[in-house]
Length: 109
View 1 (cartoon, rainbow, N blue to C red):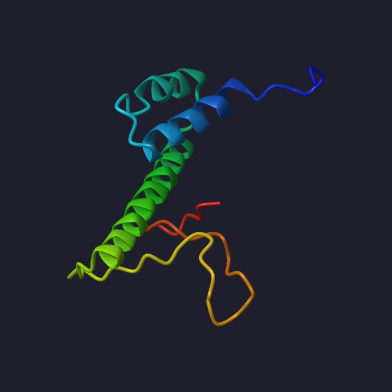
View 2: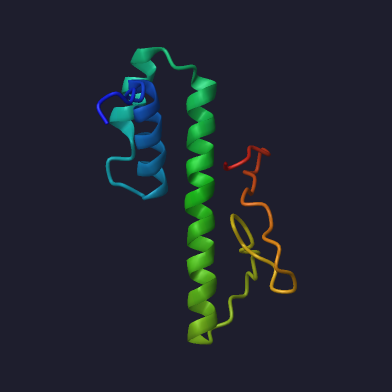
């Protein structure tokens, strides 16, 4: 499918930055951050990507911790809510919205 248009390099850099942050990559996306700044991508857009990536990373960590606590029998004293992206309500067959929001209200999808 060579006729498919390639993603713009700024989109690739934004995806790479976000995935690196969400995955806790040791390089921390600093190379992509520099590329984005050199391309003239507005700082507000970069900050939004960073906020969403951190939100997804933190939500994943909370869910993993909750499953660990449940399976290990260790009760977490924090009892933080782990409800987020793509959770379903067991009482209904209908799936809830697949988007949660960051602390500033930015949707994660």
